[in-house]
Length: 125
Image 1: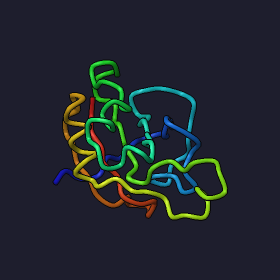
Image 2 (image 1 turned 90 degrees about the vertical axis):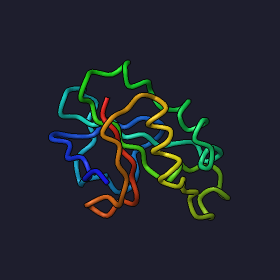
Image 3 (image 1 turned 30 degrees about the vertical axis):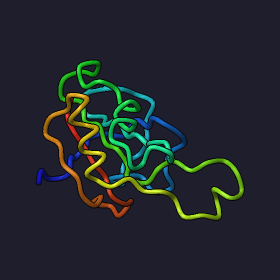
């Protein structure tokens, strides 16, 4: 299994509001660059479907070469009261890795975040 990526400067969030605990303990930024990883949350209704998760990810070819993409296993929460009361839905890491592979990412890996923000899957454009 490939080791967890180590984004240098920050994280660019996509797919919803930033999680409470930032992956890798880095700050979120609006800037783009080679040392800024993209962090994505998936829709809760897609957690078990690799094809549906893949449709939520950008094609690797659409990003600058070497861009790190990190997908959180915890799906984004809905906005209603019930969504806040129930535990968040989580996608199996195998589903996230299959989705990354189908979108053309390389150097794919998965595991626990080193800063304790949950499980992640990652790939490189």
